[in-house]
Image (cartoon, rainbow, N blue to C red):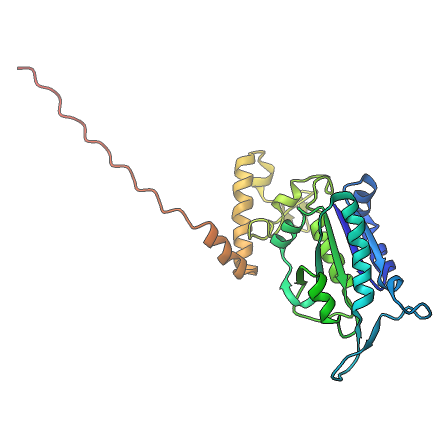
Length: 257
């Protein structure tokens, strides 16, 4: 999977994505990323200007359409040389729908994703209308730029790509995978500061361990995220209790005549 990030600060993207699990996944060829400097596509050869005042007045500067559009077209041309497809373009904005695990799973199926990181007071609306396919936010607050939200989303998406995690099962059992938070986990030693590992986890009975983990995930979700718990119950309604079987009456013994 390939990530293409349009940004004014490529070094910021590179520092975050080149380390740890994602860095190893890049080395193994499971994912790739390129941080493309929008300033390289400015028509202002002297200062590489990419912003200007907004029409109608107002505070701050606005990112101009032309450098962003030309930057995107260069990325698109490179993608079409390999796959002949038009990529999804994500504009990182607090005005978008809020990013969650389901969106991450959906986007992880794409071959190429393009992220546009805004700055200043935002981006000229005309270029957004021209190139953007998805408006996505990571929460109801405002940051100084789109680089951090973009890397947050890339991290969440990339770890769902096969091969990125050493244990692919991790992505299937962690929080939000089924509208449930993850169950509590324990490691050695068996007792620490007077707190013991739940005996069921030491039993070796995998079926009972799975049942315990599901039970704990449901309890934790109900306590900490009742909104997710409601979604879980909607998708997994409790099964009605089984009716007790009626005992068959013993037939009367046959009488010899």
